[in-house]
Image 1 (cartoon, helix red, strand yellow):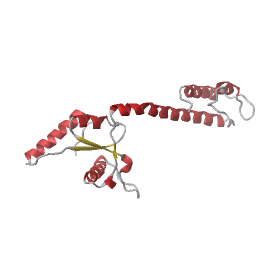
Image 2 (cartoon, rainbow, N blue to C red; image 1 turned 30 degrees about the horizontal axis):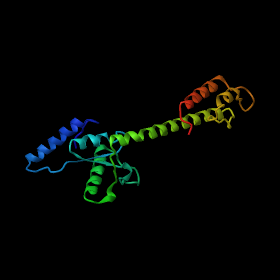
Image 3 (cartoon, rainbow, N blue to C red; image 1 turned 45 degrees about the vertical axis):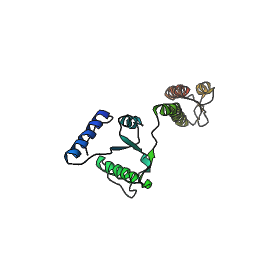
Image 4 (cartoon, helix red, strand yellow; image 1 turned 90 degrees about the vertical axis):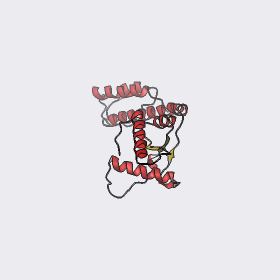
Length: 188
């Protein structure tokens, strides 16, 4: 196993050429180069870049790889590489139960997905802020505040604690900041 810098396509290609050279010196002919990696934050640009250079690339869906569920299992890069390699080789032999490959979309297809991803992220952010605001207000006995209402900022100024006292300055300011953040997120 060789350690390669993350996202270093040039280094990856160089390592592949070195392995091919070593195999040739040992009297072996390399007819096929296959690269497999686990789908993750990098998306599919690595697969597209390597495919453009004539390399067969597979992106392994992480949830499809079976792992030992009993007890704690050790987790190291070497173990992860062995698991991925075993899954990839099984899949290449035609044993589909080893893993599932993620289809590699074109750049245009991936770009079309981005607005939906951004909307999901903003919606999750809005929900997080709303929950923070509700949590803050519940500490003062206010459980019925609805931050999504158009008049929520006006209602926020009129809120009173459970005993009728005005809210202290810090929760009011924090709620205002939360509400401002909600205003920049989509409503549904």
